Length: 166
Image (cartoon, rainbow, N blue to C red; front, top):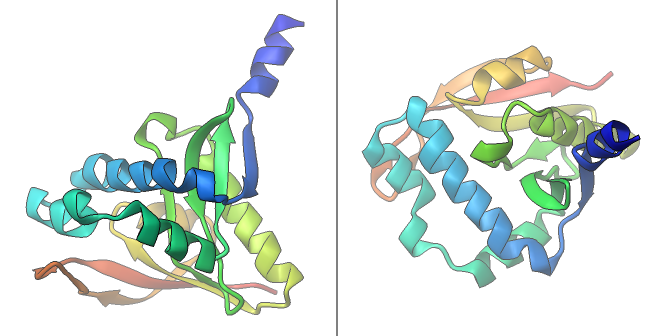
């Protein structure tokens, strides 16, 4: 019985984003960029992308609410977050480095895909980092273009990706 309770306790739960999630989701974003993405981007690039000293939790919260975001928790702890617009654009999908390889990103993607399908959205699209590209490819996304957005004066590399929803 204890083993089953422990497994249930560790399952990924998805819920709508709330104001109370602002600081934790911002911390997940910063740590995911600074730690996880550092495998594929230079220190200068992760600093420019994460901008840890320049982030305002009030502005972050407003943006998260505007994107109709969702959060994933494991055992009550925030493990990741994502969103999907009415036209199928996934603006953000980030998983806490300490919760990687537990199915969090897969659960988030499954949730946003189900949401998009239920709204009749024909396609998902995202601007995906070098780090996240293999994950998105494994889940049916294809690269449309390599892009070079500039953040805080530093050129990054990402990929415009899409997935048809039939």
